[in-house]
Image (cartoon, rainbow, N blue to C red):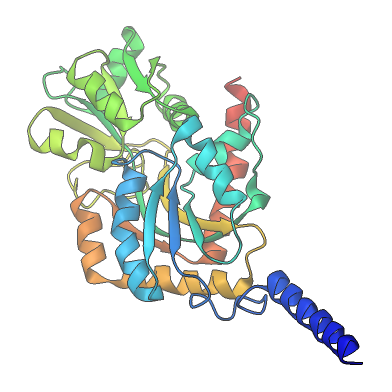
Length: 324
C-alpha cells in the first residue's frame, strides 16, 4: 500500500513538472513579464558602430530601467544581417529577446527574389519604433556640386559614381534616380556607411547616400557637403539641408528604427514592451542624444509600426522585382 502511494505521488509530481515546463514561469500568458526573465538580449543584425547599433545602445539602458531587467546589446551582422534577423524571428517567445527590425532593411532580404531566408513579415511581431531619419545625399566639399541641381545636371551629361551598399540602398537610390531622372554608375560597397564614407574621402566615388550620424563628423570638419535629405522632413542636425520634396521631387523615404519580437510572443509581453519604448522616447535625455547624432525621435506604437511595415513592403516589392 505504501509503495502504491509513493508511485501515485511520483506520478502527480511528474505531471506537475510537465505542466510547469510547458507553460513557463508566467503561466503561459506573459502576464508576469518582465519578472519571468533574468535578462533581455537586444539583438542588432548589423555591426557595432552603425546607426542601428548607435540607437540601440541609447535605448538599452533606458529600456533596462523601465523593465527593471538587465538589457545586453548583441550584434549579429553576418550575412548582411540575415543571420541576426533569422535569430530574431526564431527566438524565444518569453520576452528575453528583442530585435532591431529597421525599415526598410528588415524586409529587403525576404522580398529580394535572389535571396532565400527562413523569415518573412509573418515571423515577426512588430513592437514599435523609437527614431527615424532620412538619409543624406552627400558630396565632397571640394567637388564642383554645390546644390542638388548641380549634381543632377552633371549626372545627365557625364557618368557619376555613386556608392551603393546593400539592396535597401538600391531601393532608395532607385527611387531617387526615378524622381530626378538621372542614372548614376553604382559602385558596390558591402560594408555599409563606413565604407561609403571612406570611398568619398578617397574620391573613389562622386556621391553617397548615408545616415546622418555617419557623415556628421565629416560635415562638421568641412570635408563633406550635404545637398539634400531623402526624408519627409529636414533633419534636426542639418536644419539648412532641404528635403527632396522641397526641391520639387516626389521622394519621402525615411529609415525607421524599430523593434520586434519573435512570432508567438504573448500579447501581454508585446504590450509591456510597447509601453517601455514609449517611455524611452519620452525621456528628454534620449531625445537630446538622438538629435545630437543626427536623428529625430520617431515613436510609433505596435499597430502604427505594423501598418507602416505593411505599407513599405507593398511599395518596395515591385521596385525590387525590377532590379533583378
